[in-house]
Amino acid sequence: MDKIMPYETYKLLHIAFIFLGLITLGLALLADSKKKWVKIVNGISFLMILVSGMGLMARIGISHGEPFPFWIKGKFAFWGILAIGGPISVKRFESKKPLIFFIFFAVAVMAVHFAINKF
Image 1 (cartoon, rainbow, N blue to C red):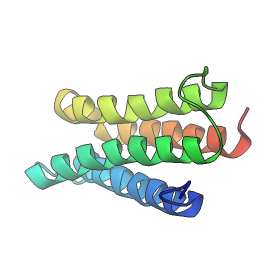
Image 2: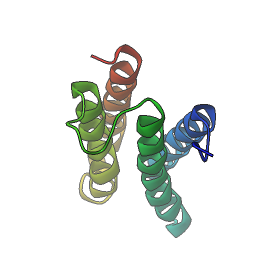
Image 3: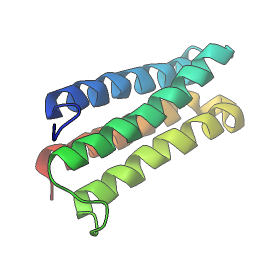
């Protein structure tokens, strides 16, 4: 019993939580949602993006003992910006939320670009 969950399951979870994280971030930024559940779901979804991403790394043979490839370091940076910058910007930059939303959209697209091209 080598693998607990197959690659496809981790990938499905990773993509599903990416959708959920970006939707709740969009709700917080564009719909002026001050609801507590949006913040909770956003935080949990970004944590699950990290967990499922680590599972994907294990399935493609990237060990935690070796240095990560550049594309994974880039994804960590991009998702860190979204996970930390999102909640901060919701509170601090009330008048610039639409601009911040599009900046975060570009950051998410760059994370996808790194994942697809793996450079």
